Image (cartoon, rainbow, N blue to C red; front, side, top):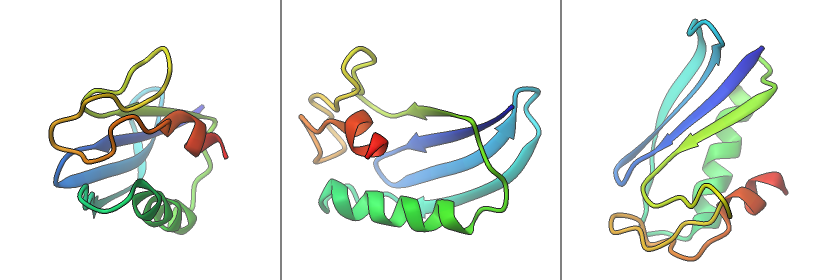
Length: 92
């Protein structure tokens, strides 16, 4: 199974598709631009994913203050996207 990993940081976001064993197929780093609206970030994320050649069956996201129960960003100091339903937006 291939897994999409997304590590959202205040400066950069690392994106990669890996196997369960940890073999990396595709990876890229994009600027997070956390001072801009979340929708701008998501559009750049989707554009990056469209450039990947491998499919994935699961997604894992790491970022500051992501509530694992609700999937919402809550009170993040280095991101201006507080109270945004990230998980719901990604499902769309």
